[in-house]
Image (cartoon, rainbow, N blue to C red):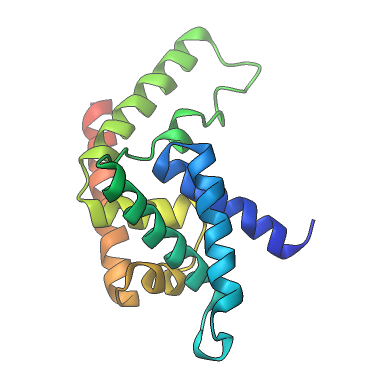
Length: 162
């Protein structure tokens, strides 16, 4: 699989998480790459960030047209890091599930810009510079958004475990 095909699938997954609709995500990722072929590559400083920003903008436009906006939760809902351990007891699995549900609630409660920065960093694994380009923010603002989001989530986890 080439780098471009891997990125194509990553962007499709990013769009599917935003839209919660695989067919729409497939349509939009094709539109991203169509726009990419028509773009003046000399004017684009960071092609990967450009493609993610274009995907994001197309998704937001799509959601505005559909008048619905569903939050991204699939990544956390389906993570299985500790649940897959063979030595995990039913109590461990239940505790992990409760922790994940609480974390999802806290993630949903974050301000929209913080939520988006978290998605781009931890789900899409973009760099601070790429996130800044996607969101139209400075690198330092991205750092602040992520810092605040992580602090809020960490405080919620600590409070829940007490």
